[in-house]
Image 1 (tube, rainbow, N blue to C red):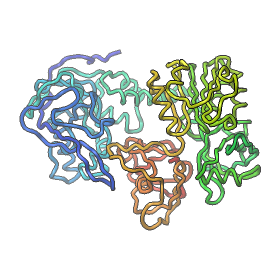
Image 2: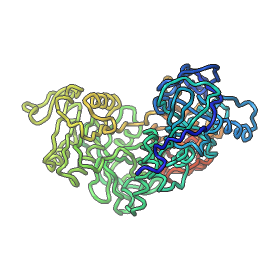
Image 3: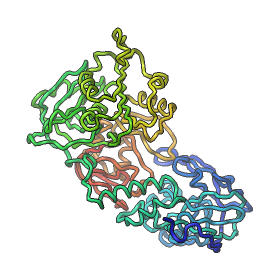
Image 4: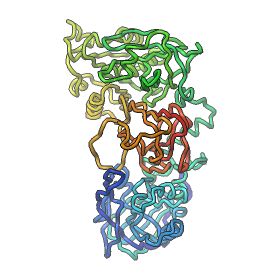
Length: 591
């Protein structure tokens, strides 16, 4: 239901446009990298035309996080400038310093509401969301903690969508012409996303504000779903939080050679107790004796209630896989971290496509087993690519599971051998699976797709599926090794393999980046685990770099960290924010 103020026109003078600021993106040196950013803006004289996507003469360096129809114009208030001048003891702050297009008098963040509409000069605008928390405002001001301060002081500023294009100029009155639905202020919405102790009734209102930008709407829908699950007393979903902290000893109770260079290892809890269930598609992290390494492997099955199974390919330069193949046998004790991972089977009834290449079969095999036991009427397309028939070592198990699924279809491609005579009718083919091959399968675009394999395979299959009409959000994939980096605005550069940082070795606690197969001793010359990872060329993810946005959230497999600065909201106990944390003990990260 709409609030009483939804859509009401009121024509109230709300403020004054003090400055119109523009600036085109530039390259700025930063932390041994280059940042491409449009944060540097300056006031201009005379009228400026505001178009649907921008103010004339302005630009954004990172269109994934800034700009676009929902974020065409950034607004910041003169009153907030005065506040920061006092807080930061600065007398050099001038319009444009906070990266805003419009510097205004009035329009405080705790008074302006999402969905409010304003007339300025010839143009009309609608408020869509608070400022994106981003490290570049800290870069511009020389205050790295600025993204956190903007949220904690409830002074983020906000974005406008252009409803009617037209000219504006400094001195124009700002007239509020319509109130937004539910009267949720910019400061309220910002706090609802970034600060703890969210009010459930506010979340319900937030998802019912049509003017709120789609990204923020989705975030609030996810928060509301989690809050609703808590209110109903529903038990936590299996595998959402790791079943135990740190590493636990498991004993190898069986080793099976399933294909040339591929072995399955059965791991049983050292106490003999039943092991917690895992979500289909999750992985285990193994820590081997001595300095033999830490590595994660998908769970390929659960032979009994006390056992997990992982299936490991011997990699040419893989020290951990070589150790497993050469030195691990029945009776060997291996340390194991609890099942983790977000590449997990949905619990819906839509058609399902399980698509794998090589050893990428392991997580989707767990998914197939789950469907066979719990949803045998579900439509399933099993698509697998292997080098030869001998490399398809889990074929018998796959066939047994498919036989329990009356609506399943199976297609297998061998890239280095010919299919047996008459095998085409059985879904066995020679050559590589490509876009044309996918097209001939007539896959339903309503299906949820799970893809696992080498990076090039995933990229090619994903692009082909999208071209066939699959919505990107229906395509899920698991990448071996480190996750793709998220470094907004940072110019691309040659990526090196993870390595020890330059300079004197550290003497602090050992930090292991499990996905990157690298262990480094901590040194205080780094301000955070994020900075250490960057110095080692470990793939990193960040945006605010001050504990606000949680872009850098990383699984904590073992160890303890301390925060400085304290994040506005801590993540789950099984995760850390690398941008503001330092190790307190030997630490293993899922990075």
